Image 1 (cartoon, rainbow, N blue to C red):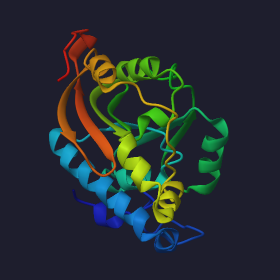
Image 2: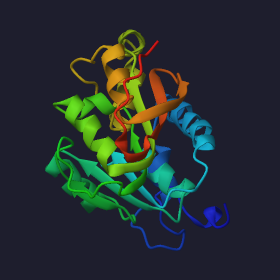
Image 3: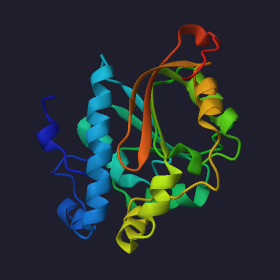
Image 4: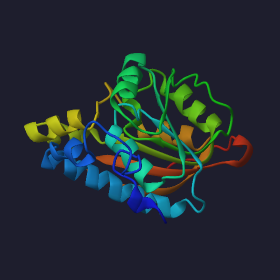
Amino acid sequence: MPGIQNWGPCGQPCDHPCEQPCEEKTASQSRWANWLKASLFNTLDICFDDVYREPKKILIVGGCRQMDLSQHIALLLPAAEITLVDPDEAVVKKAQEEICCRFKFVPASLEAMPFDADQFDLTIAHNFFAYPQQWEKALSEIGRVTSGNLFLSVHRPFLWSIAKRFRGICRAMTDLGITLPNRLPETFDMLTHIHLYAKIKTKLAPFPWTVYMAQMRPNREEKLTLAS
């Protein structure tokens, strides 16, 4: 897309005054963190092949914690209006104070988000189940506020149980703002709920997550689709 080369990794034009240059912000991250990011970002690029029109409004769930992800989206789609929502007000405030970017920061419960219906063309919910207390209501809210596409990822417990044995990966998770939920719903229950609001177009498996790219159903037709 034209103009991308003029934006830094923080999502601001490269001539925007920053106290700390972009290259200094990212240089300290470990090779494990860079590896996890590369795995996720490559998956995003593949999933975006299913987004036929460039999204104008994007919602990133947990984006205040996962700033590397938010900054990557800002770099990839410099013309988009990006909103970051998080249920922890302290996390939102900290992100606002530290990040000199063009994001909108919103502290709100994911089960009752203060957005209009169909407000966002694309919602990104990476490592989704680390955030909501009632995941069914949170997914329903995402279905309500999203008119186009949903990028949803969940961690794979078995792979994480192996990955967490390596100190470097644990540090990388902290660097990337990734926390793990206490438990995951059954895959069948999760997919059945997603299919009430969306049609899954793509399923990928970047280590150590499972990613679903889904297209929202017109008028929120509640059609039960049995997941395989």
